[in-house]
Figure 1 (cartoon, one colour):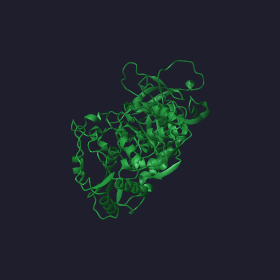
Figure 2 (tube, rainbow, N blue to C red):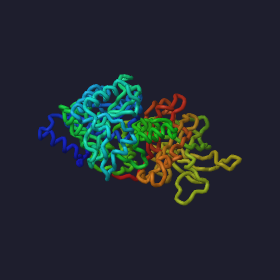
Figure 3 (tube, one colour):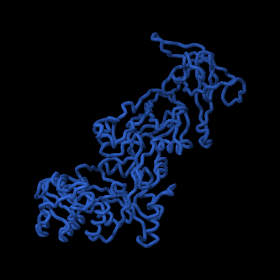
Figure 4 (cartoon, rainbow, N blue to C red):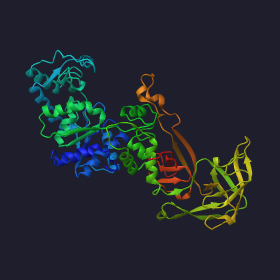
Length: 552
């Protein structure tokens, strides 16, 4: 991890190594494969992989696949792709389901130590018996079954002799504990369902809170780094390690979640957006998923730098989404070629330019990065400009094109608006202009000055293209007040989050490839959509506009 003087986890690891608590560092990134990774997971990835790299340690990628009802191999593959795209390589690839036999053996050990029992209470009854944050729980009537009876029942559970929901295995701790997580938590439940990795071998599955510490210990993880909501689970994490008599003893440390304005950071809610067709998939460019950000055009470098700049602390405050945009602008400003695209075309005929003549003009690919060289762009009697760059009756201090006014065409000449052509509805459909051949860009013309510079595309060689402009999918809301106001996050979905426009681009962009990125003059940074672009027509997603009010 870099740029983090406040990274308290780094200090903990350093101290653990210096005192000899651990001789090396092993971290892990342990997603459940029940959805696609989002920008919040990127923080965990950068922290776990980054800290291990800094201390010459190792990081495992482990899938916590203990709930087959929600998990799928599709999510496994997408997670592996996302981690690699972000620039990280795991040292070991594991599945929680690889350890199901070992977990079962440890559960049997707990029963033999009278530290676990089979309970017949229903899920609702267990919740009722658990008590509240201010009232202690009460013991299940099945809590004092004999060790022999519990062993027999647990074996029958594994053998499939009981229906779903009829029995669970619970840890036997303390129903009066002030920490509700220690009130005999469920550690195994029955689920007659096919698992993506183990098939139909098992019909009982460990709960995440029981499985996770065992997985860490089995893999020799030293520092189990997780988000702050697991802080109350840490006593049970340590209990499992101790009572299951694990040889390796990982240390759990929690850090604050990454929350971003105008952004949903819940896989459950993101899945709802996908399932209910608010978006066209997990990789919709409006989604905060890693695949959605990649499709929109974000770079792995920009995401890594963004995460590092947010820091590592116990707090979970909200970060302005403009901060993420800032880092992709910074990353692309020297990388992306600069070109011209017209999103809302208005035809201009330069009446004094020779008919049937096409002139090739020189243009820099990126003035801030001369190494990117130059290109040739065509210019002729007919060009397209933006509709918004012309006004028939402009206000004061309007410096673009209007009748009688002169502007500079980027890389080309001065033109002057002489005539406005309208259709039968009074809409402006074409402008007739004249040009001054003495004002060619690059010739050192020092005559009169103009205040407006317009981008344009030569009409006869222009390539049709589609542009997709995005606004936040979620109109920022205080999720804490959702329930009290009788609303859900869906009430904050922005109906105007996508605008699709048909326009034109320079002929140099005829053979663009998916994920090619460009800065279109005045419009922003764009990415060639890998999903809907075709050889016949490129589709460009706007990554970010050119300007931002955000300041670091």
